[in-house]
Length: 272
Image (cartoon, rainbow, N blue to C red):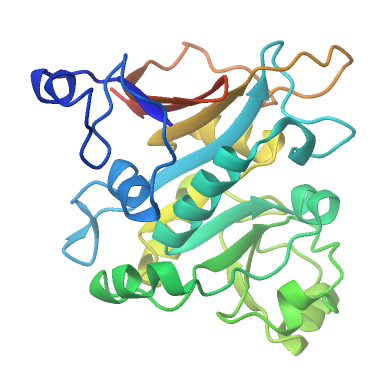
């Protein structure tokens, strides 16, 4: 892996040898350690107990022709480096926010504790693993799955106040924490982010799917996008990384980091 952006005088001077995370645009390609990746993707200092403002980042992958999935799943367009970053972003988060359809399609399991990140999480005042927070208006979920029955950290479900009481009861019976984050059947994105922050979950990561990400974009609550551009073409009619009604005015984000490995580009954008 090598860093393409930003390139500074310091990184350029180290191209030949390269300290951690310092390979410049022409530097040697090498595998970054987990500590380097954690430093490269650290949350802003204002998110977390020391600065109580939540920060919501998304992590998505897209092919060159804009497909976020192949055969309904993201794994076929991913790579080993993409999965290392995926694991790092999870290890840095307090909670992973995901849509119900993605839970069903991707076969979501509970987040696991990773020994490599144990000290980092302890120093940040985090538990052993991030909580999974599932967004679901209907609560049409299989609460017998390990995601709900045997997580290391209790799974949350974000839903609306009008959700069926029998489904809420089924979730709670499985040990799921039900969080009301909307007045009707749906979930209000801003209210969901605040509800998680009220539970001490400030460093938030969403892994989609496209419909959920579209809702977060439309609501203006997305702070950062970590987008992997996969050097593949799939054609077909797969969804883009975000779907749903368009925003009135395109939202501008600023490129803050760009890494590359084996033709895959790993970009990081923040809202301006």
